[in-house]
Length: 101
Image 1 (cartoon, one colour):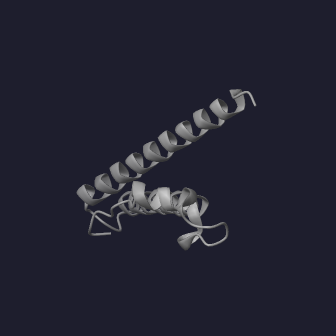
Image 2 (cartoon, rainbow, N blue to C red):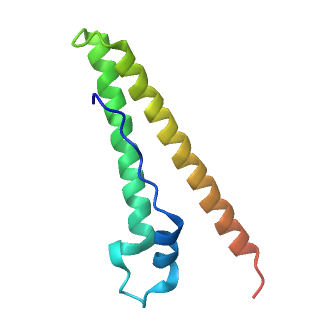
């Protein structure tokens, strides 16, 4: 945990390929749902690492408050990102529901 871990966000081109550039069932990497699951899993892992760093600081296992604060900020940013993604998905779903066929 000495390094700041980057959250990998799929590029627009990889999402567009997953959205329809390949025939059904032939999407490399599993498509949008797989990317979303991986992003949620990574955000969860970052949260767990921040909890471990906080616990280590509180129990005296480490004295590195800087590393703990970085882990907490990283967890906060990943959580905010996941909330924004959820909000966008929810608004897209609601917009689709309002469409008249």
